[in-house]
Length: 305
Length: 132
Image 1: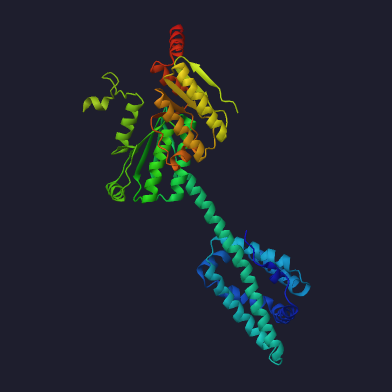
Image 2 (image 1 turned 135 degrees about the vertical axis):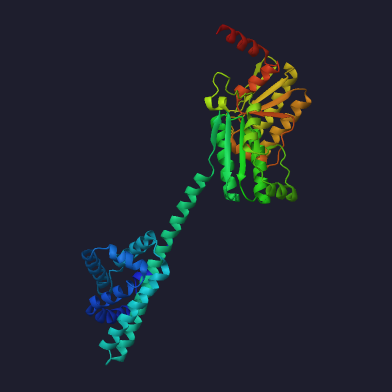
């Protein structure tokens, strides 16, 4: 996982600590009021409203207490690591809940507005402290957001990559249709990455299932670029090196035109119009014969017709 | 590594049991061609099940050996090409002309016996089949 330059955050300069402390005094004094303000604002946003109403009030109070203790520990006692870890886990939680990131800035704005009010009132006679407190607040909020955001994005990235993996696994099934006959239906977009996956899968399955004929059906593929077409041809060649014949079926008119215009000849591959035809050819290659039901076995409904 | 060359009727069976070095390929080329000439073999089955990695030199060697065997009047059947090796051969652009590729040794011997070169084996299977 990529990490922020945490040292800068967990080791604030003495000026920063000073600013934090000055900002912390009014924040701690009005902590509950500010929380209520933010909560009221949050309830105006439908997504948060749903979230907040799902948390029991008792738990909310507990969480607030923990938050407060952690912030206090960080600002007054320098326990930044605990605080950072907590913020991180919050970010991970939000990402998993699927909360949109921009919404947090809405909340932040209301938090700043509320806190600003209190700081200005409390320090109205001391402009130096007022300045420092505002600076401390801004820095603190930024730091918190940086940590949460980093964890949030990392989690999102992880979610995306796991999904990508599972899509890849799902997207290239190799089916054993008969003894020594495999069928590979390809559906959806084929990019270079997926094509490579497909090749690997196909060649391994040829070996493991001792396949003699492979029917590759690309009815569900909308477009093919020259790279992918080339890849398919190479796959066909590699399979034939392993002693398997590949039958390509379901090449749509668009793909047929593209392939010819690209100059990709499907050398070595047998092409058949549709999957049914492909399977028939495959059976012929394997020396199999499909025998229809004899008169005695014919279903009753067929007899009537 | 020593690569054994087995004779089965008019068929030679060569099994590369692991990845071969360049010199070993070269060595194999010499001994195999000698053997093809001396035994008047009609088929050479090259079993590559044990070969997992193939570089451009080895790829070219296989192709060369096959062409040389072809000139010597025999036919090469390559069996047991692993997925990675198949992909490498294609990537190298090797066409493997005058070569039949089959899945494994069983199929190779079956083909050879059908063509009559692995005669003793054909006889054996026939006898075995009759016995059942």
